[in-house]
Image (tube, rainbow, N blue to C red; front, side, top):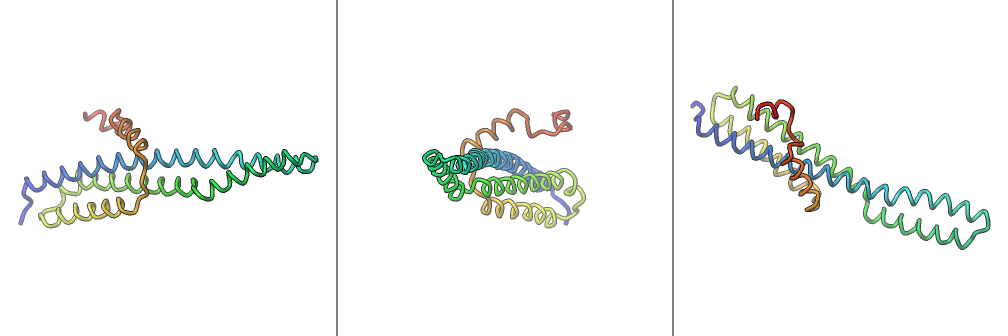
Length: 170
């Protein structure tokens, strides 16, 4: 059995859709990573500074100031413990990396490897393998916000995700 040109076209189209989905999702996860990293610093840096200042104020006999600062540190630390911004940032970065890896694998399969396959079942199996990875990644990844996605879409639409060679080809 040889490759049917119509089937190959459909597989290539599906892989192109996958690449587009992965580009948007990966960029949205990177946006979420930056947002949660920012929150980590917003809570963490003042917590460190206020903690040091509270200790100094306590030893200088400014008990009320030390108490107020310690209360602020407690609130900031509780927010960091509850929201876990560092952990969320890391999860989104990992998901973004995995989406871009999948996008790259889909592109290589669509552009190069499919030309080397001589039978239809092997071409379909290759596409199905990538589709399974995408589905598993969609299920395992944390949810990004609508604003993360909108910024990602705007960036992709503006050409931020294109490689130089792709800009020359279009």
